[in-house]
Length: 230
Image 1 (cartoon, rainbow, N blue to C red):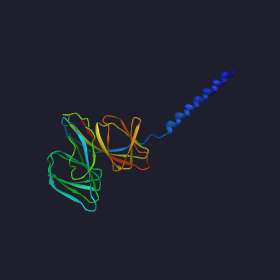
Image 2: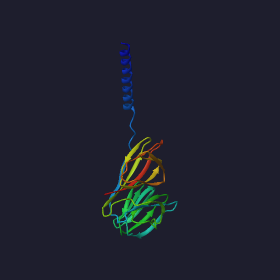
Image 3: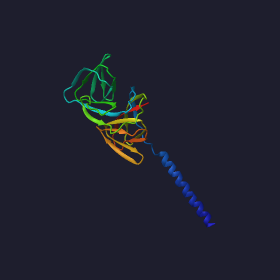
Image 4: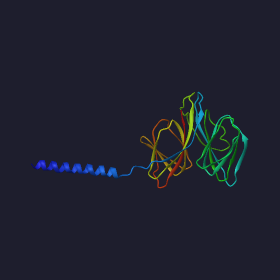
């Protein structure tokens, strides 16, 4: 009889512990998700047999603005404004992009530039070879290896802005992508491996591998992500 009473008491403790754990789990708030905004999603074209790599330039201005006369290129360029603003002129007229906005200039499209004072613009493109010229900007990032995209397959280029609140996270799987941290420190976890990226840094994510991007700080983390999708 004593053993029976002991068993009942132990069972009650186990049940109570299980209920407590369940209540705590229910009361523990989930990590807040990121706010995501798609800024551009356009057809980019097909990679050649050798594939593509990312080439990213930083164009920053000080107290004086910088203007460039009408020109065109034998390949597309994408322009993304990190801070300040920039003006792109085409046959359709002049368009001013504010921070967080992007625009692609197509192959052989006549265009002009006006980079306003105290502004920062990323100029980038998937490229079939190493870049010798970074649109008269400063080299910020260049892929160490081919992106692994499929030759002959048409790809779209998408740009998204992410804002991750403190203690928030976002799970991402992309085929071929690079990002740029605008504000804060971004933590990136892939399996058991975790790295961090500071503001002002560009980075690439492995293709088709789930990454958990999180904010371990007390202020929001903001970053942009450009990815290629078939």
